[in-house]
Length: 431
Image (tube, rainbow, N blue to C red):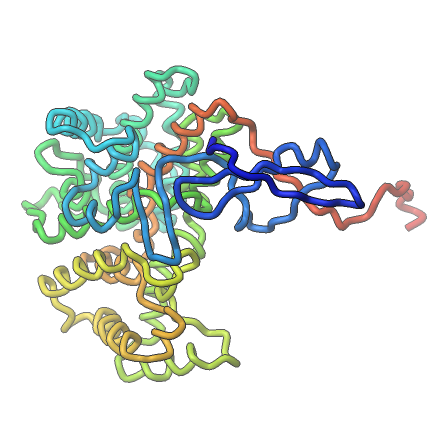
């Protein structure tokens, strides 16, 4: 807990209460209201919890005004440019960058746990062929607690560690299997001679009938997508994982809850919504029409993939993602893909339009990640599973941090009740 540096005075019905104020490493001060209900018999009202700090954390810091994202103090631009996903995983999990020996040990540990229990294959066959891959992932990840009994005791530090490695290692396998199942192709087993991102691409796009070699540019782009989505502070899905964890639920159930929350179009589904918008635009000549609609204050239409709820200046992840998008499109081209043609031209016209600059509506990470995934050949239904794969380490890091917090209590938000008060039951014949 941050040190008390000041107090805030609150007066209710003529009575005054002194509330501690905590000063964080970065960001606004926090008024501590934990004792307010007991002292004053009042709740605070904050729909969406947008002004409420629900926990202490040392993992990720965001400054939306500056366009800054730090993992354990390291800027995301440096991590995405100089590091790679599994090293960032180590950083998020353990708090420091690993030595060469520590990183090698960690990478080997993850690599050697990528296979899933063979009986879990039967779960996939229980889903309809047209099931959304996210529906499949929610079910299969939740079912891991039925197969890995030796890593469900949250009070055992060793079991927590084993569960963490298993989830990071097996999530790409499960996501790839969900994809393969949805398109009717056989599952492709993980390979220990490939790195994390290349292994995922191989499991998604290889077939038994022929050799498939992962292009290093695509592998690097995928690794960057993973890195840029690894954690993002107390967002909706992370808060869901923490809330589930506060009840003492096992780690697989908690991560399944996070995946379910991430599925929403306002959260993890944003890059899918972006690609659907590009399909709606259809052709380059229609772009001015949609830009005009976005600028019309009487039209509630908005361009998906532009602006961000937290970042008020620019999304620092988008700068790095744009580099990857340019590399991938240079490699694969856009000539035969009208969606990618629309994306490139929309980006160009929006960045040149003073309206978007004034409103700070710059392309965000979802815009560019959607373009990359589309170019690689992923259907839009796989965009959110890829996001879930990447965010798993963030969820686990937040889960582990919360379990180690001596102040941990089961989550119990309050409400502003506006319904009927006590009234007598009326027999049905008198209604």
